Image (cartoon, rainbow, N blue to C red):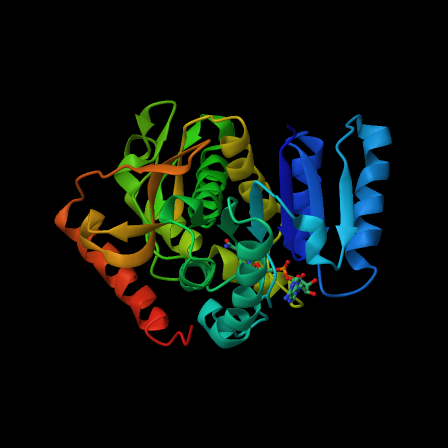
Amino acid sequence: MKTKITVVGAGHVGEITAQRIAEMELGDVVLIDIIEGIPQGKALDITQSGSVVGFGSRIKGTNNWEDTAGCHIIVITAGLPRKPGMSRDDLLHANTEIVAKCAEKIAKFSKDGTIIVVSNPLDAMCEVARRVSGFPKNRVFGMAGILDTARMRAFIAMELNVAVENVTALVLGGHGDTMVPLVRCCNVSGIPISELMPADRIKAIVERTAKGGGEIVGLLKTGSAYYAPGAAAAEMVEAIVKDKKKVLPCAAYLEGEYGCKGLYVGVPVVIGAGGLEKVIEIKLLPEEQAMLDKSAAAVKELVDLLKV
Ligand code: NAD
């Protein structure tokens, strides 16, 4: 049976996610939105790009949840993006309502599906999707760490003028300004970045990474980033469809790992056919643990405000 993947929200992140999934031929794609015509038009456009690029995935645009029935993977990108001057947390109440509605429909039409949450504030929206869908934690997790890590890798590659494929980085914590870039885990083909650039440049990269989303919001002025977020969500879908056992930083529901209990926090995990198959726990240095605790506390503050 062919894999069926739904992308909820046919806005900026949704369209790129759907396009990449279709181009990678990961399965049949359903793109759903509440605005009539938008998902249908974008689905048709992506389908037609297949004639040029050379892929044959089926992609259907719809406003009807029945078309999503029996989906294996559902990526939720529905919700408001932030505008200049806003933090991701400012989106809490509006997006809780939207994500809760989507999770309810997913539980109804795709009860065995795996949910990847993208909508912000990410860690709190994962919790909304988990509570409302009633799905187990291995089938509800969020995309943030891949994006934050991708930003850090890009900044390191730009600084050193080296191929980004050779750069490895790791960012933990909640998807907000308190995220925790782990400098000691960053390297270029195995060479620690501390061997390759001075401490002040590393510090500047760490700061730019933490504010990476805001930098793009400030430039675009009308919304937030979508090319890298869409690519990151598609990478997670690929890891599930191909059972790749990829080690990726994702927002995972922790039950004691890293000292966090009953909370979504970004940590390294294994993604495969079983969804989020395993949390990889590494021993943090005291200062890293303190930063992670602070980040988790910021997530908890938001989760405590949830009314679902
Ligand atoms: P956008 O405004 O371009 O698109 C959002 C879409 O959601 C719109 O088309 C809207 O009609 C649709 N929508 C609203 N309610 C819906 C519902 N109930 N069912 C289906 N569709 C619905 O926004 P965007 O730039 O695509 O961003 C989407 C979300 O992703 C935002 O919350 C943004 O903050 C978040 N985001 C997260 C990350 C991350 O790293 N996790 C990165 C980028 C963006």
